Image 1 (cartoon, rainbow, N blue to C red):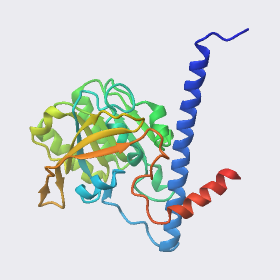
Image 2 (cartoon, one colour; image 1 turned 90 degrees about the horizontal axis):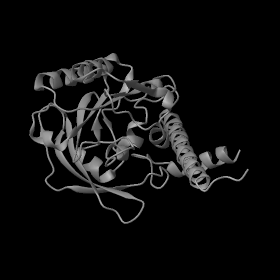
Image 3 (cartoon, rainbow, N blue to C red; image 1 turned 30 degrees about the vertical axis):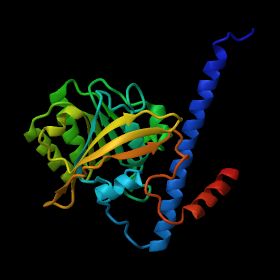
Length: 280
């Protein structure tokens, strides 16, 4: 039986999806090799450092933020459209930061097994985009609360639990007191809380340590562009900074088009070992 005319495009789409997921797995393997290399450089008995920041994957933005997203704190990504998107429908702003968020904050197999939680009543992430970003889908925790009140409660529990590296939640209105409770929960659990909110909330009060406003820009090639403005970057507990000059960030769907977020020195050695491992 001959395949219909629609069979070829479907087959090409499946092949493309499989390739992007495989690239994500290769990126995760490369990150694992790099972590193992730096553990060896510190010595086998050295305790892994407790990170305070998670690089965003964009050096210019990391420089403006003093290192990246704050761990053990709330962070806000304010998007110019209703959909902060996880690889589906809308501008896909959040998708640009997924490779960084997918990486475990701590080193070692046991410490790296903490979850990445996605909490929203209706909107779900796109699993192939998460796999492409290098996330082990076994770490993904999906929570679908019944409404805004339950959503805030679920975010609080996830942040406070100590079982999550990061908690991501598209969120609209929430009272200032409730946001402050979430900030305290993030501090207690040592998790990175990322709230994706409409840009209209930029003038609303928030205890978030980092607040970014982002909007997609047109791009003539497959690479994508974002216009990002730093609204707040709290360094420590007594200083807040904002950058008046927006940054233009470029990124691609293919995770090997550019270096993984905040790649440490020695990437060439790790890449060579990865090539040997893949060849074997």
